[in-house]
Image (cartoon, rainbow, N blue to C red; front, side, top):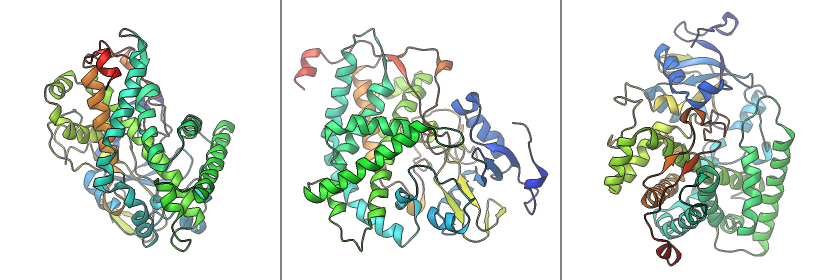
Length: 433
């Protein structure tokens, strides 16, 4: 990576930092495999001043220890609306706008504490464990649909499995009618595809569709409540949850509840195919699946960067002084490949046996849905590899593109063509499962 330091951007910035021309919006080669780029930047300094692709200045935190500190530092505010009021140039507002930005990922305590407590009732260990039969049923049905193409056919594992599986699960959890899910899913696919500059008309249309749908869903649950999470949240007193917070929370739950898990599944399949010995070790001992999921989270970076943070006062991170009111981007994908924390970090090792990676965050904003994400990923891989252990990539490896998501917070495959191969489960058994 060339040294593109600009003198105009380094006023009052320590000499040890670099100001990179652009962080994000990378060329396809970096977008598809950003880890060498991360490593080159991290080798210079664990914390650096950058300019984002949208033109906003920011600081990127690259080292493991520095990232762990930043994720748990109360001086790193996540209140995006307050930051916009204080300095409208600190971050792009994005879609669907401020009305849907008051969720637990964009607020600080005590609002964060209140919102997290309200939503956490859906993610207790008992509730998550109770979802496993439903997740297995969904995975089995999706694999049946893919297998219908024939054992030698090429199928898209993203479109047919990795994305619909967690979306179906979050739909069940929120009480979204099955008939509505394809339309809502299509809108989110458009909205979560990255773009440069102003949002395209298709993204605005998708955003408007999501906003209108979630408003209507809330009104339906007010009139006809069920046992789902939306009904539970709708029933909360207005002094505990405003309409803005309710709609924002539903939006965030749909995004976080399906997109990152879907990318983990797709990215993880590619990683296992890239490391056939690791795949064979997992097939030989399926009991290693939970540890393998942790390693895939570390290695494949479905969430390369944590969401928005801004300093409320000067903060020193990784030996670098960051001024107040500056945006800070924590690069989880870099921290999780820091050789100072992980031996041989650029190799997949399902026997690594250390689940302390930062892929699901750290501190009070640690992913609330982590148990559900792990359950979904475990079931997805167990079902897929258990039925199709001879799964093969049906395209040139270099032709795969990670164009889903913005490349910063979200990183996923656009498609994953594979040949499933013969099923290890007889068709009769599948029909009567």
